[in-house]
Image 1: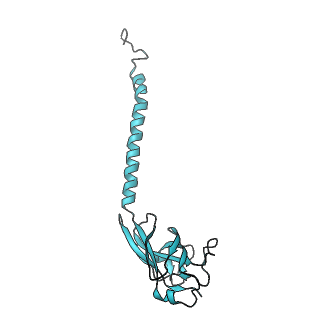
Image 2: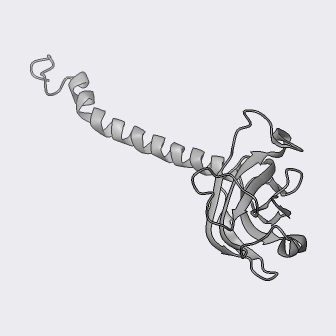
Length: 176
């Protein structure tokens, strides 16, 4: 103060204005920390699954199976409550497209850890899909005669918060 009056450089509002960028930066850091904490909490409240793939013995012996059990798996994840005997109900949301290339199930093998699902809310999920052994389903993502498929009443797995569920998807039959 000069002579009892405030100058521009010593005025309290002017001094606060100079501190504004620092205060804003600290606020952003706090927000980023909170956002990271929120993301970590959201991640901990969700889980995922590590899917392996196999075929029932009857698939290996099916007369309609004309190609070796090698190819690409295509499918989707659905909430089990949205899947009936004939498949997903109309407008059922999908919770993750599955595509696994280079799968080889010749013999009685199982390919472990072939696909990790995205993080999902806890619940019961169903994998519906097919094994494209004749390499012609890539565009339509639909099976044709000779492709092993899953049934809508099998391949259900439970997602739990903060956990990874190991589950083996089984191709139940060969499409006629």
